[in-house]
Length: 138
Image (cartoon, rainbow, N blue to C red; front, side, top):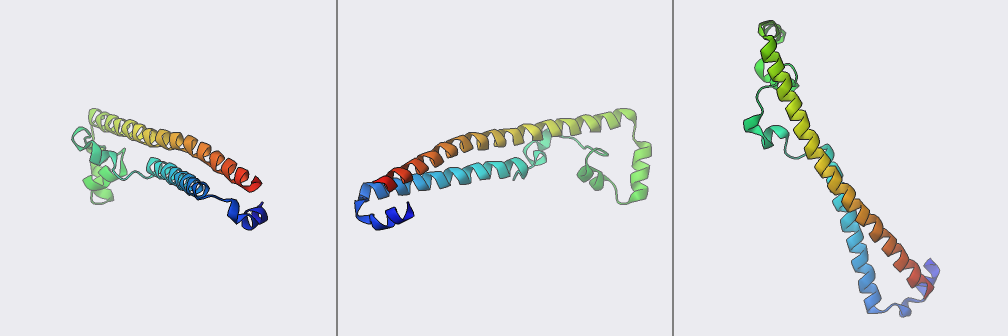
């Protein structure tokens, strides 16, 4: 097939080359968009804390970041744990659960977008392959 494409260069019309270039560009753009959506599902640019700062209270003990902001060393950590009431601990746990739910929803949205784009990518790849094989037969 490669030999046929190289030796029959004159049979390619300008429109054929434009269509091939456009289809190739579209396919690459869809691939990159799908990959970008997958990356955003794993490593979001904006954290849930940034997006929902006003509604997420401290999640001491259940979130390492909030725990390290609240204590300086092991002795202050032990003191905070001993002074923590059951209601306060439950409040921190509920806040962490809410954060996890929001984060899961955000990642799910990115992943659904990436999968949808990937479906179009498969169609574009099949179109590009069909176009290439058809051109090779000419």
